[in-house]
Length: 611
Image 1 (cartoon, rainbow, N blue to C red):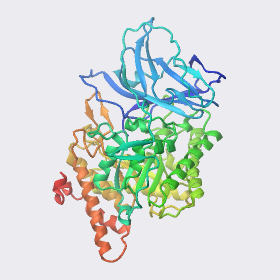
Image 2: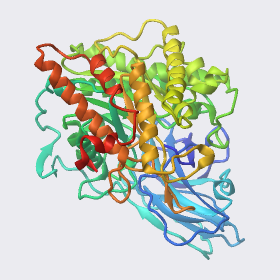
Image 3: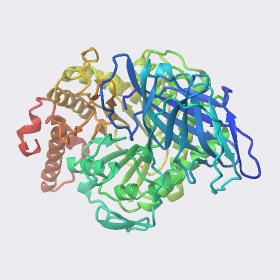
Image 4: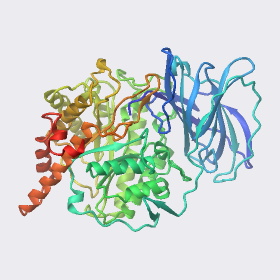
């Protein structure tokens, strides 16, 4: 995800009362409030209309409210100082309004519409909301947030009764902007209608995947926070079908239902509840994909001032263990492979609370944060290993693996504090995902792509080996354990200073170079970012153009290229089978590497109907 925004993390460390009561509480202590800048694109955002002032700047803010207390509580609303010259153009999981106090200062209030009941935060869990804003100075005019306060209704743990809304202090409202979306108002019933058929949490499993369906052709894509859709299906289901139509048996998705504007009544921070209690996730898991990759994010536990505590470690490990056990039990004998991972971990490491985002040239990071993130990685990998051990199923039945995604590898080789040089050599993990923009974004030829990408992949492979024996358990062998989890080229920004492609054909050709270089190196997966665009820049009224299908529902040339490549791979598989032997992934992907990276015309040469 490539958009600039703000992540506001609010940690609640408040005493709880025996009976429900609502009070207004300020959060001024640095130990309970941290603000970090992190790339985030709202899945609920809509392009704004009208012209923009040249001095205006749009941004997205994602707020995470964390309850570190011993009992549940309800947060009715959150208030903060907000520039009176700014406006809120869209909001999700909250009704966000702006106002002006009697002394002329701007304020914003978010009344939460997420949680069961609304605003309820269980002990050790979190809720999220966010909004898109714009105004002179952009996000820098908003930061740091001041005069933060919450209306908190204290309850006993697990109490789900809705407290009486509090009476808020009066203000003189002179300007107000209100735009909302509610994603938690519908209760998911036991039986729902999806894709024209009746499914439920007890739906029979699909038949075991055939050897052909399981065969890994390495090439795929992902769908994260798609910005648009074209059918009656929700965004998760529609884009999953689109990935399937491309011919890939790999699907990478987020376990955050808000990224797909899904309606749900489960705790979104419980991945088992998300996968088992939200019908669209259930449906997608029963599609004939062989490999699923999951973004499982946990609101930056390792960024807390007190570090990654023993309680954090145990909670994280047990959550991942429960998810692993659920996947193994639910999908045994299907032949599916599930991979639990994260998004671009180096951004989490280098960006301080309250500091500017995209801090790519930062050289040193606090040792406490490095150690905390190291324990976070260990907890997640241990959860997967313990889940595998508890089931002890053969690889042919079902598999679950853990991957750690890194993204700032070039600077790690230069000695900067990064995951790949400070964490990866010391914590054994199943796989490493490389979000490869720092090596591929400026590659304009096949030779350049080969050199840049192989340099970083070789480095990551060597760093992994320093950690020693890989984690134990019945898992597939992919030969090499480093894969390309993201790459792509934005056709839309037209930033030649960033060497963006200036045409869809150039986007296609440069993508071919990267795919070919990755296949030649032997990476087990190479995933394009992404199926539908997830970034719209209000100030320029343009999509960034990281897409295979644009906002007009037009397949881009690179979509045709990848679909044709996958077709060629299936044909090669069948050709080898007719020879009376089982194909290997290596021989098929080596063949595919010769079929790409020669000309952008590949997308129309063999299958002109694709275009």
